Amino acid sequence: MGQQPSENKVLENPFVNKNPITTPEMLHMFYGREAQLRQLYQDLARRQSVSVIGPRKIGKTSFLWCACQPTIQERFNEDLHRHLFVGLDLRESLYQTADDFFHRASDAILRQGKLRGLNLISEGSGADGFLSLVDQVFDKGFKLVLLLDSFETIARNPHIGPEFLSFLRSQSSNGKVTYVTATVEPLYELSHKGIKDSPFFNIFGQIKLTGLTRLEAQQLIRELSGRAGLAFTDEEVELVVKYAGVHPCFILRASAILFDLKLQGTNQQVLREHFIKETYTDLKPLLQDAWERLSSADQADIREKVQKNVHEQRFPELTESLFFRKFVASKGPDEAVKELEEALKNMQKLAELGKTSLGKIKVVRYRLNGNVAPTPAELGKVIRDVLYEAFDRLKGSGIRTDEAQDWLSYNILDYRYFSRYRLKHREIAARLEFTNDRQYFRKHNAALAELYNILVEM
Image 1: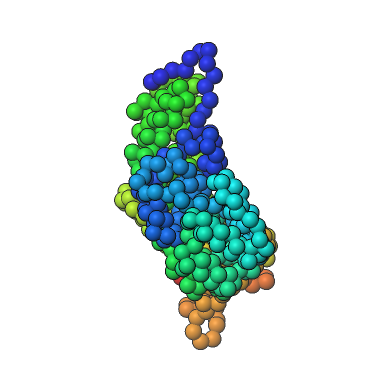
Image 2 (image 1 turned 45 degrees about the vertical axis):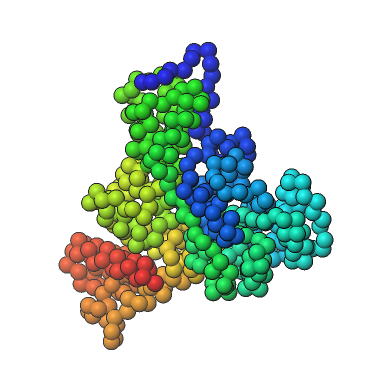
């Protein structure tokens, strides 16, 4: 069972922290990312702006903060001591103006400049004040690097127009500012219509954060457990990696549970059984969230490969996890259609409709037009409009009748969900002359699947 805890020593679980790494005391928890850091530092040395892309909870915030730390930079040969790294968390910037951004950026530059011993002076406000500080940093022989976490809130902000991005781009073009953004999706995919074609997005190289390598995952588990005084055995390390995979968040949650189980002194067989059961229950909300954030096409592709026991190489942070593959297998091929049916039942209740999984589909996210934090009712209205548009595409040719086969799917869904009368299934079966309930439900499910395919393709 490996190392046992001392009876007189209270051990602290080193895996329980769920926050990003943003303080020196947490730096020991940062593992791996060697290839991504090397690329970032090489790009910064060339004053190349960088877009860091990765799914939620993959460690983008930790990556940005740790990349600024001298102890991390010392591992590489690039000389970055004349770079002034200034980080901004933009998660609350959805409805802020350009002046709000310049004010926050200026304050951050002044604070960081003071820590580096630069005698920067605040002159003016808004864009002028920001530009004055940029020039001062440049004149002192430093390269300003702005690290913009959660940049999607800027890209989707309806108050941010092309003039603002053109101003930012000009500071990159003249070599005075290098930008590092962190987003869930590529910049060109998440921007609102007014700035989607901005040349600002053309200045970025791209770094993708996915899962750790297996060696990095093993190192994280082995060293953190050993540092805490209850080292995991090789078999226990492999147990975590096998079931949690290489997603940093999954690894930490799974390791925290295993650490607590080891503290209880359970035998190896009981430990393994309890670990699998407790960890899957704990991770299930995260697995569900990760699944819902995939496109419908990616969900279908992953489900098919899981059924064939073939790994999906595009999402290693998910598909390397046996827990995630178990979760996908439990969804079943008809799960999306069932979720659509639940949404249709709430067509007239916008707040309830806004809580359904249809809020994740591509066409709905696009129709939100930059609103990344809609209320359930606002999201429900967008979903309802999309549903009606998709339903309209089910119309057959010629005059609509109950007997016309090319109107069958439209008629079933209209009578059941879209009509204000909302007939019961037996009333619909009688009206459309189905011979039994089984025939009705088969046609009903086929109509739902047809509507769902339209939604996916919109």
